Length: 76
Image 1 (cartoon, helix red, strand yellow):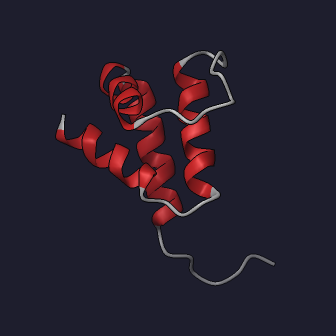
Image 2 (tube, rainbow, N blue to C red):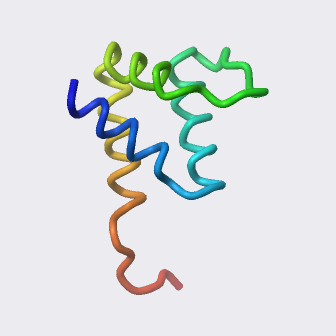
């Protein structure tokens, strides 16, 4: 469960607008696009989703890791 909590914390520690975008994405993936976009999911909801859906956990882990990876050079 430690990895789930670490990933949840990583998403909540992102600066806006990226925090909101990651949280919206995880909510929509977890609920099959049925998430109420009028509010952000809380830590407990995100932790539950990531802890019960290993595929979702892996996908979000890869996205967060890629987002936090240092950028090398510029794409032209």
